[in-house]
Length: 416
Image (cartoon, rainbow, N blue to C red):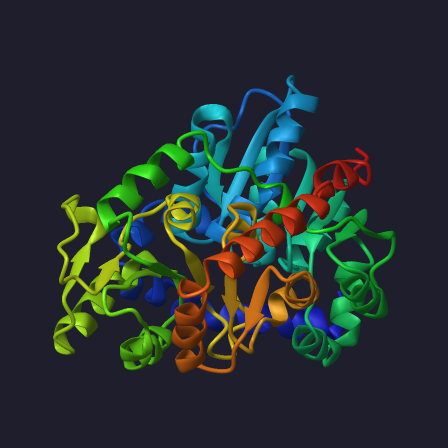
């Protein structure tokens, strides 16, 4: 074990009490954090009876991105079980909602040697697939020692993350060099990963382009739009992060016409009540999606406090701002909005989707703004220009279709 890995592992041991305390703290708002705690330490119920393919998707975004790959794996290997692991309760809930009993689910343990060894010895996976940027040093090393091939799929590595890993070159090279393959989203991601020590890197594209709307999405979108008001312009603020709601509500008076409706959907469900309180403090007339009530004419904001309905929200709006991009958080997935044929408004910070965002803007499917006032002003312009609104929606659909195919290209890189 090299010195960097020893130092990393020692730091994890020091942080373990804090990590467990954090679970308890987060459970105040989301009690699910205290369920299955033993799994986070490598303790699980009975082992599955059949051999396992294992996919790790840390939270909701990665779980949704993994859907087309998981469905393809289930179809290609009907004699194997598929284990889907997570790090958050919302990710686990999303996995259960999408796949039901088609997959096994568990939490991935903390990256402590004895915990990951228990995990691997319990499930004995034939193959492990880590989604996006989930590089766990002890886990990858332990899997290699057991002859378990590990693949990094839908891999992305921003310049900022590359610099962070670059501070520990021996640690990064040890883990990335042990991977059986890397399926990178873009050429830039592939180059950064290779520079850190990854071998067998292939550019396969972004799996998020292959995610299809749920069967009931269009039906629910129609019902939501009827509830919002078919004649009211509707702006969706999707997957907003902490701090962004304040900025958007400050800028809300710039949204016109006066009857325009803002649908505000926070990224994390544990923040639904906090955003509701923010609306109350500002005396903004609002209703909650969970109330299942008709939207009153004087309601200015609908708080989208529901899970698993993002495609329906996109289908029910006229234009969509996608969060995580007003503040330096890297941006959230805007590809679903394009696939649903909706004009997209992006803030200045989209480094998690750098290439896709640039291509979407160039294709006429998305607009870039610099602040929350720009969100409201651009939405107002779009509402006043139905031809441009429709043209951007069509460009979004074409953009999404043009970049599909990552699932099959990723499958072609997997050998076990």
